[in-house]
Length: 441
Image 1 (spheres, rainbow, N blue to C red):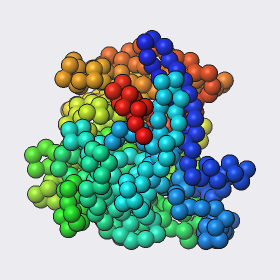
Image 2 (tube, rainbow, N blue to C red; image 1 turned 30 degrees about the vertical axis):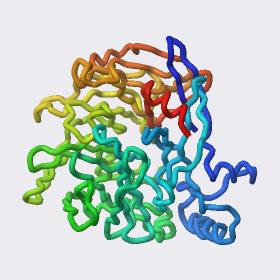
Image 3 (spheres, rainbow, N blue to C red; image 1 turned 45 degrees about the horizontal axis):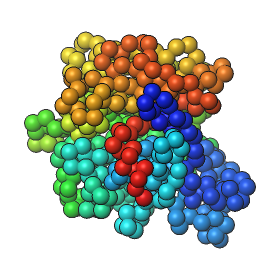
Image 4 (spheres, rainbow, N blue to C red; image 1 turned 30 degrees about the horizontal axis):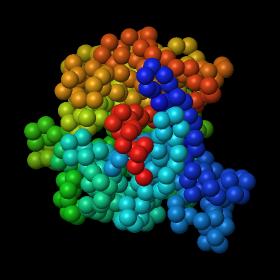
């Protein structure tokens, strides 16, 4: 479901709509949920569910040839389309209308040239307008496929990338010359469903985490350079850029992780610090093959946000959605402004916003104060936009904060007519993008 606020002339229009995916259409017709959720795949019963699901697909009980994803993870704008994304399927084009309503336009197949799922976190180069993305397959080698699309959405290149095992790869990064792939040891091990009565994705800390740095216009994987560090798990990248003969990558890292809620809670109880993701800097020396890493911030957080016009370029700040523990699970309670240039041994927190008691949110998306970044008074001249929810009554708001001052008082607050769940990604379209996508398709 997409929650959308259209802000125009001092007024706000609100809408919440499901993305009308192939899966949702079939579930509406059936009158009940179809297929599997990852939480269903636990223990012997989960294995039975998985095998039953595969049998139903073979028997045509439901149709997966046109995808079976949920398009509910993130949004991006490319080729005059607003795309709803989920890493288990192709994107869906959606259109935001002047009254705030979001309607589904259809699944984007790139003229039939993309046969694999697409990451929920593709990257748009702010100068070339090209889209860089990948998809992964946990069952079939070489497991990862990387593609580049031109500003119109035409596929320019496709490269298969070999990794030794099926893993969950949620995000990646680009610089002006490279694409960086995150081979974290969140390994697909269906036998663990029975052996350990857990989910089939297992964080195996006996394996390293590997970073593949590939020239972003490569025609094959031959030019990829791999760098290895002890096991960490990463879901979200802040940014990456080149600095001389090195490549810098900033990403939120866990030292230990489990997708299984009970196992994660037990691990957190035993070692809470290792179960809290923190922003790290990785430096890859492209000449020597050496890699170093350091913790940039002790803040417990994720969903890092930067100005989109600086993707793949050097940035001073990232805005980190900070977290706290709500009984067994962490929730987003504010946002920290992290200074990536802070000297080691000094605090990297350049500002902090807390939403208030019992109020949680998700990503705080950075929006520049001007559509032309050259008119901004520095990189941090902008606002942070997020949706909040009050735990005791579900009261929800869209909030806007000043990213330069990080004042705890919002610049604007809009009370929503219904509850908006916390813990999700956000996105902002410019007025020009809004008008273009509204008149296209």
